[in-house]
Amino acid sequence: KEEMSRTQREYYLREQLQALKKELGDIDDRSQEMDELRDKLAKCRMPPEGKKEASKQLKRLETMHPDASEASIVRTYIDWILDLPWRKGSKDRLDLKVAKAVLDEDHYGLDKVKERILEYLAVRSLNKTTKGPILCFVGPPGVGKTSLGQSIARAMGRKFHRISLGGMRDEAEIRGHRRTYIGAMPGRIIQGLKTVGTNNPVFMFDEIDKVGADYRGDPSSALLEVLDPAQNSDFTDHYLNMPFDLSKVMFITTANMADTIPAPLYDRMEVIRLAGYTLEEKIEIARRYLVPRQLEENGITAKHVQFDDAILSKIITNYTREAGLRNLEREIGTICRKNARKVAEGNKGPFPLTERTISKYLGPPKFSPESETEIIDQPGMATGLAWTEVGGEILYIEISILKGRGNLTMTGQLGEVMKESAQAALSFCRSRLKKLKLGDSYFEEIDIHVHVPAGAIPKDGPSAGVTIATAMYSALSR
Image (cartoon, rainbow, N blue to C red; front, side, top):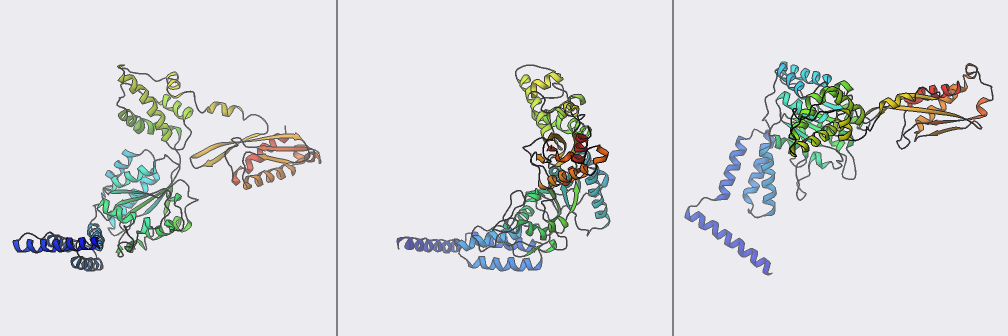
């Protein structure tokens, strides 16, 4: 009862204050605020249905008490509508030479991606109404997928906004929450448009292959409308409850594996695969980008430490095994920090890099390519190629022939498909008894052991069949 009387008294005093202000001729802050909103609405170039809804909400706001909880909700909604870039876009840079120079300045190689962007700009210069492509960069970590999106935006003269989809499980992250919920907000797409302030930015959906789903909905299903050029001109966010044209936005998605992208979503995108870098490409990228960046970040210069091609090659082959460049940059950063400490302690340098100093800075070599090639000459061994998320790997197959009763043993965490490949390889060898010059009962008197090293790593797939058959034939024919 006391709380109610206190609230009523505050309301009464506030109304008295408003009346006194009017009598004294003071400016009514609320009236001024309403006039500013009306002016903003009149200047806003939103569609007619949007203006109609905004006017309706503005009239509602005028009739509400300023301290009412509903008033703040309506005011927030009106602010969101008026702050969106309905028809405000940045001008595209259609000079192909300048755009190519920007792309080449930021990234080495990746010719296929650069060619596709230049093609779009060429079409855009001839047809202003063309819709932006929806690209999907698929490749191992560290090959530059995310940074390539920023470079594309810079080359086109557009704003850039990145949305990480990794682990996203709530559909409302894309479509927003309905205004009936407390604390409702628009989805990440509308928020991003407000942040960049233009209706034609470059939007990057990072890690689209890692989107999840639970009882709150499936974000990948919500993305179907966003990434469909036939539908995204009328994208409706649950919070706004009015269509917004996304057809001018250029969408880029990234993924490590295409297999885990939902099929309907995959079908809507133009997939561009980014392969891992070769040794020569890694050396060139390190020389152009990684070394200068690490020298600058660690406060030293090329006068203190120099990385020649031989040293970079040694670091790549002995201390990294990856398709991308992240570990290489870490190792270069480690060397730079060691030398930065010397400079800070008063040593002027220069500090030459040799195999000995590299081992001192980075420790003993983690990988030894030379030793891997020495063991291939043995009978019963064959080399195959394996594919992983981080790029290609060399896969060894080892076959041992033992006295036994015709059993086939397989070790190394092999999947069902790979086990079937081993069975098929055994059947192939049994069909070649005469060529192998073996007796009819030979296979009943032996056991065959198939082992694939690195037993802690699961392995599967149909491509190892020929390699297993080759190793088995080799072991049987010695």
